[in-house]
Image 1 (cartoon, one colour):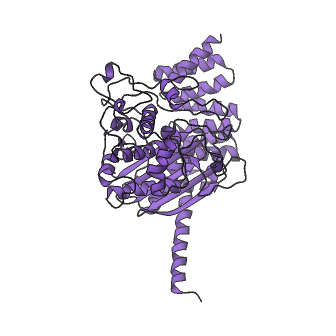
Image 2 (cartoon, helix red, strand yellow; image 1 turned 90 degrees about the horizontal axis):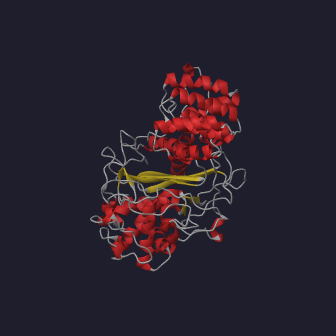
Image 3 (cartoon, one colour; image 1 turned 60 degrees about the vertical axis):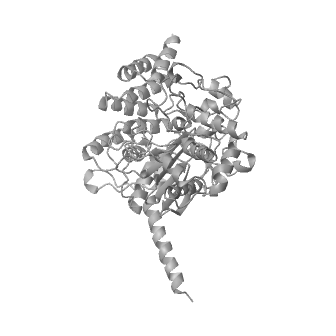
Length: 519
């Protein structure tokens, strides 16, 4: 006999299923009066279009994980499905997690937020120069990216490459593939994202504890929160590799060796799952309210989520209208969404997003084994925000996938010329979530390249520079394609145009030099 309890459970289950289906619905249908074919751009279709093999999502509501689900495969072309226990590289989401570990050491008395880090560093020291004469590099400045340090990001190392030590990376010594980390402006004077600074934090934690970094994080964070599927171990131990997804480039090709190795652990070396990262986000939100202290106290959590810089030049979840602020480790929302904290991440073949509203207890974590994961993640977070009523949420002004998706589908159904004609239709219609911007044709061009339609890609990119003559990235991308085809002069011309618009485009400067040297 079915009881009233059974019936209630069925109702809850049905409601949850319907909610998940609405999140999975992908992009809304285009109204029929816009002269576009009816397109059902569901999550599954979008993953197919953008060559995203696998995806994992966890949704948080009222300080609880209300559902978690895996989609697709752990490797492009494979048959093993993604589950909620599948491990993904978290990219720069590694940074705030590492910051939490360091703040735990502050509370234990091992570290101080505001003393010169050279006081506690043993194995390596920050080089003193004219910029550090009066202002010093501190843990607070390392975590808020205001320490004046160099080295933005790390490409990682192929599984067959020699792996440098942390000291070699900090010094820029072979086999490190990045430049030395040093101070080149006065600490505390401005903000600049620095993965190099996070490596100093990693070395600092090692020096004051005498323990390997993965063990520090296991003891200070993972064990306390119950994050059983998370590890900073690099390379990943064999016992965990069977649960790990394989990274995928934008063209759908698997990263050689399945993934890169990141000895830059605190900056980019975390392997985790959306459920584990959600547990940590919930813990931090509850700690802010004094309702949990398994990792950090209420006092230091408030310090972590307090703006250290009121406006940052890079974007995690903000835009020009709603700029992100910077806390300790986390990006923070502006005054219109003061309880927002989060981070995004990008490793070779992987992308991740963590977003949390500490007052309402709402949020989500999305991880993908694809370099286009954030593009799809923005769409999913918008769906989740709508479904769960995130009151202060606003979508970041990043490239949207709606317009490129329409062009991709039309190109597949008919041809690229038809798709490019429809670009103007979309532009005139200016539909929410389908309005083209300066990145639409770039994304479409890359998708054509992935499908080995090189001439079509050039046609799309020519239209790009015609539509957006002031956008340096259009010329840079067109030059990249010409260079790949051996059209040296056309490549140089477009690289030069890109540098004319954006003199800071070092990629173009270096490529012009290489192409010129070839004669």
